[in-house]
Amino acid sequence: MRQAGGVRVVVTGAAGFIGRAVVDRIERGALGPVTELRLNDVQAFERPSAVVITGTYADPHVRARLVECGVDVLFHLASLPGGAAEREPALGRSVNLDGSLALLNAVAGNGAPVVVYTSSIAALGRADQIVTDSTALRPSGSYGTHKAMVELYLADLTRRGLVDGRAIRPAGIVARPRGAYAGFATAWMSDLFHAAVERRDIAVPARADSHIWLQSVDAVADNTIHAAMMSAAALAAHRAWTLPATVVRLESLVAALAKRTGHALRVDYGGGKNDQPPLDASAAFEIGFVSDGNTEALVDAVIARIERG
Image (tube, rainbow, N blue to C red; front, side, top):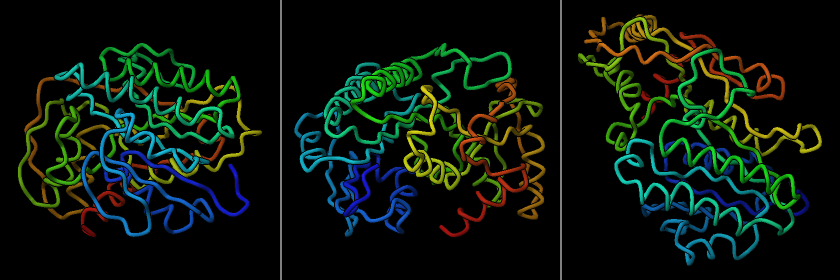
């Protein structure tokens, strides 16, 4: 990553849940000096420290504005969520596949910029045994398929020396703000935390003995910045990592939420097991990625952010 005089940074999805946390860290100096910060989202927003470009990066005019001053670091965080992509497959392809490939092509070959791409565990599909970074990509839906395809294309651009790509796969990011659940099939995971804070009952589609992977948005944002800062010389040819998550038994999470909030959360469990397999993130830990820790630490981090507003 170019350092002399500062870096030129582009962030897509900058007004989103992860995007805001990443931009906060960039503005606090997490990348070092920044000479140009260009932020993109489909919704209008203000960020006085940056050039804000509203619209979809799938639009060639928007894309041209994003890259016209050159790019040293691209955080490609934006996507159409999985539930929405299944309901609107043409839009999902335009945003998650065609637009992403076009954006990578737009920055490729111009000084081999660092590209951090937020993929998803949806690229793995329904794994039925312990997940490692060697787990085959077997996506079971359009969203995961597009994520896997972009991962592979990013890896090929990196092999050819056109970009310095790093793909990360977050999972179960909590707790999204109330009213920002649209399109997310796993919205109930975030709502569980809000229900605990608001002391209200909630129904969930999973059984009490289901295991789910969870990460606070702060852990994901820290890992996203870390992905950009890693020395390329220290990285293996494999450039996609499933981020360390806290694997939680659902009824244990409910108990931890009750303890943290002092309220006996009442949950109407569903009949689906929705069980996620064990996760071996040792390879990610070895190169500096982090998790929230145990269930209690995760709950503390997420509830603290909700309470801050």
